[in-house]
Amino acid sequence: MKVILEAYLSEPPSSIHCFRDVTLYASCFVKADVLLECEKKMKDSYYHWLKNYGAYDFIDEIIVEGEESGYKIGSKKSSLMIDRITADNLNIIITKLQKIKKYLN
Image (cartoon, rainbow, N blue to C red):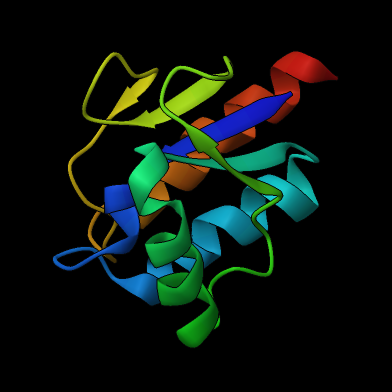
């Protein structure tokens, strides 16, 4: 199973800490491959951004838009349509990921 996050979700107004919580949950509890999706020219920028904030540890790979399919979280053609990850919607995201885990087992 692959969970694909649109890369902009790691930027403000999202909380980088809540973003990391989502990737941790998807990786450790759902046992999904966590992929970050962005434009090709932005891959290095997102890598350095996430490494500097300690939020890269549960991301398996940074991919180009449309390169992989899976459970997508973001604002464009996504399974879960959101525009930011904050403490206000973290519980909703985790609940959706729990449902994915139940479906897989």
